[in-house]
Length: 149
Length: 149
Image (cartoon, chains in turn purple, yellow):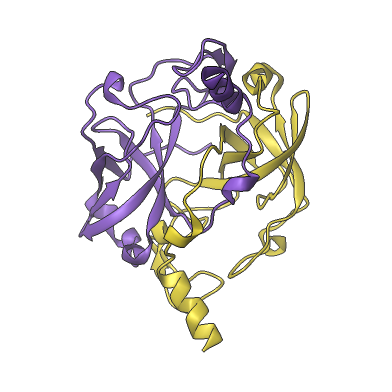
């Protein structure tokens, strides 16, 4: 397989995981920046007009993985591939952010949920979405129903 | 950084990149399977109820990267981070699929656009989406307008 390398690093208001909003209905409105390394800046050409981006990044401060774990919003365990747990076989994170503006190699964005200094692996345009009425969230919907009930 | 390892491999009807639908309005309705390795099967616990999944995978048959390239739908070059080009600094792909059913370590899905045998790095639940009216696609919208005009 390939050897991952950072294309840049996140500037985020969050210095530790305890500060990141988690669980049901957590809003990710925090503003931050994607600071792209100079040697990759050309890859940002024409990104200005794109409103939302997928950011693929490394959970660089998580150690090891657990195939089953109990997320902050529930008291029951679930499989790692059905959650956003940081303890994954490949410690890869995925966040959708809104692009506010670009200043050279710096993308100012809204919606960061990564820690400050997180290495960025890739950025891709968010071009279409699944209609909300088609999304079923499985165990998460059950947790919501249980908490309301 | 971490050393990536496959958690499984894709079964897809596409054996070569020329077979994969590309460009404006390409529909990804192909059915395929995510075959998870036995040692990671426990990580699928409770995934059955989730309708859509992010699949993060390796472009294992692309060599090198280009910071700027001309995509199939356009005759003008764009930055790699504003496109879904396979020639990326980290050869990581991202696809949203619909989960049709699970059979043990095999997830039957709709919407594959990977080649047969593609290594899977991670699977995450698709829990919410950006409303379509908020998405701007920048250069892609310009291509569409130009082709219509």
